[in-house]
Length: 173
Image 1 (cartoon, rainbow, N blue to C red):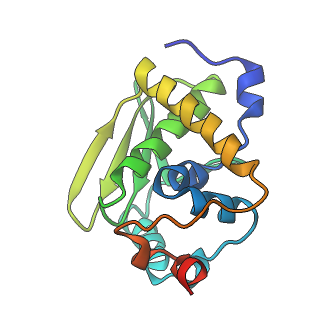
Image 2 (cartoon, rainbow, N blue to C red):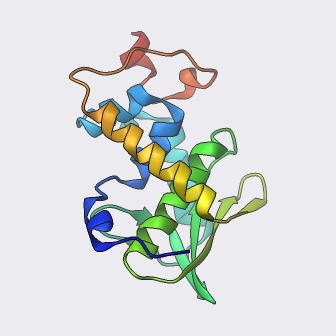
């Protein structure tokens, strides 16, 4: 896989959370990106943070202005690890980890793959990143640009997990 250009990497201004939100809900992405952050009011978010902090105490995370990775290890290249509460939003989790792989490769790092950890379920999932994933990610990033350029948030689209969302009261209240 080719390394992306400096121009492409300097243009990456999204946080991993935003990539996950783009998969979950365009409205949530827009609100969060415009500074309307309600995660601090969510018990599920607090539980997820607690799980992350207590499951892999000895592992050190990685963060910069754009990404905040739960932890990384190194074997034949960097392995990105993300800890999640449940698999219910697994597509979003996969996109987030693939974004981290793309981002770090763009910085010239050799990233082997990612691993999603679901400690509560006692499951792990290996996350690969190939050319097809890169194409899909670039389409997602382009769509995110369009969403964030909107003058007002996208309309509410009811989904099965809305009731558990930190933005539920904001959207339906």
